Image 1: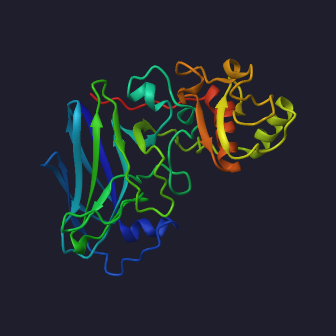
Image 2: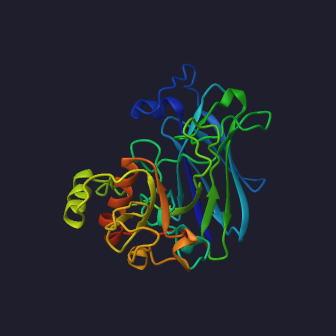
Length: 305
């Protein structure tokens, strides 16, 4: 069995210590009852006070699809926030690192999942919840987007749901629908798996370092700076511009094909070893995580029992 904990708080209490929360719930001082439902069964109820509260489920979730629902007592004036999820006392974050091999049993990973940050964070690189859906009283989703510390408007009868799949190996994965976001990209892969947060007070979120990347490129290549928009491949220690006419980067017909291929897939054109990059910052991030971060670090998937 695993222990699932959901940390919640009053909106106004969260706002007092988090500058990312701007909504002021003027009538939100009253304590409120909040209920945890797992797969349609009410599991736990607490009274949420100023000190926050923890909703808990202890049990075995079989391989397959599951729904967790957190709902405050409808009609009450106090809005709530979903702060963090813990599984077996590990703070859950949403990761894509080596998603295909770790979660879906593939033989190899797409380059994007080998040159990404350790987990996705929406505000200030924290490990607060941002996934799940906020439902209205009429059972429609309020906004299909990312929700930093999801805000539940209690007096309107709203609730939060997290739908996910447990694999036969005990891994948890889910898909985020952010089609209402102004930054929505229909080509972006929004599959994530539950991983253990690396933030422990002494470790902070690793942010890419432009100077390190530029210094590395100057040592490794005669071409300085961002090569431009295009499809990129990676070698063992660098991210290489596939479509450049400069043979130092490699082209479809150059002898660098095998050298710079990401050692995944069955051939140069299968796409697995490449990723589209549209901006200099994307390129810097991919280079930094691929060269400077992942060779020396890891992130552990959560395994439930």
